[in-house]
Image (cartoon, rainbow, N blue to C red; front, top):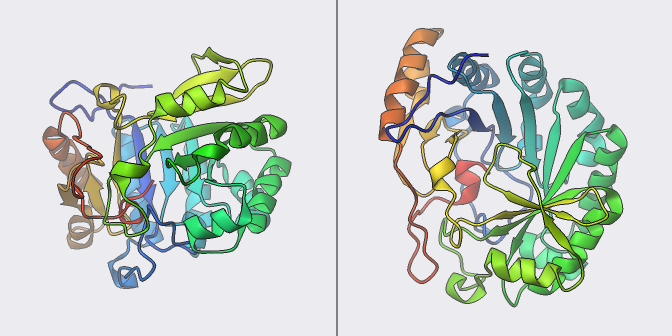
Amino acid sequence: MQDSQLVDPFGRRITYLRLSVTDRCDFRCTYCMSEDMVFAPRAQILTLEELYAVADAFIGLGVRRIRVTGGEPLVRKGLPSLLARLGAREELEDLAITTNGSQLHSMATTLREAGVRRLNISLDSLKPERFAEFTRRDKLDQVLDGIEAARQAGFKRIKINSVIQKGRNDDEVADLVAFAVARGLDISFIEEMPLGSVSSHQREITFCSSEEVRERIEQRYQLVRSNHATGGPSRYWQVAGSETQVGFISPHSNNFCGSCNRVRVTAEGKLVLCLGDEGALDLKSLIRRHPGDSERLRDALMMALQLKPEKHHFRTDEQVQVVRFMSMTGG
């Protein structure tokens, strides 16, 4: 297949799109959104046809991996039809979804049949009360049932994503690995990113580095360096004696910008070139002014790539640098 035509000023080729299909979610995770979140009016959200047009333009320019995100993508009505269209695209090497798992008990088989190949499922605690504190919803059992449903549906790779915070859930790191190993899952541990203003904790106090997380794991498990790769920013180790890959996403302690191969499109049609930058291109206005003009859309994407910054500048010891919440951008 041809190389991507999306090349930024630093020579990085964009082959990976994270496509948000909704800003809505049935959880209210404390690091992701506020309890009284104000969502975009539905008329401002891209239609399924517009989402496909965006994806089609990216595929035509050489993108080979698409991850569907939210909010919580599985609350988007009609999503399986979009996934089936994307799943039928032979050019795509990977179609994946990031989900909180709440809807998987009823949707896992549908997703698999639509062509979704991989799932990332957010899970920050195995303790019901703590899970409810993090998500502001008492639905741990529902998520665990969803994970089991995904396993039974036959997904090739299922990965747990855990945001670790010191003094809040860092004592569960080894238990989360044990959960993954027992079920043949992968797991990635994520340093919290300073997106949006939070009131539940002080990020400079709760920051837990990937190195600290790895040290906790190695008190119970042997980790071996791995060549496993999914196209994202995780750096992987393997739990010795198992198939479980343990990834570390380290935007603070081990900046991964030099190999960045991805951009994001929000549910409102904003092209976000860097998660740590407020700049964005309004694709929705272009699409609605010129419906069906795929060439104009592709030209706009190629031009926008020239504005992609070299790297983000996340810090843990100062005020919020990016005012939008993660739920507004897509995972």
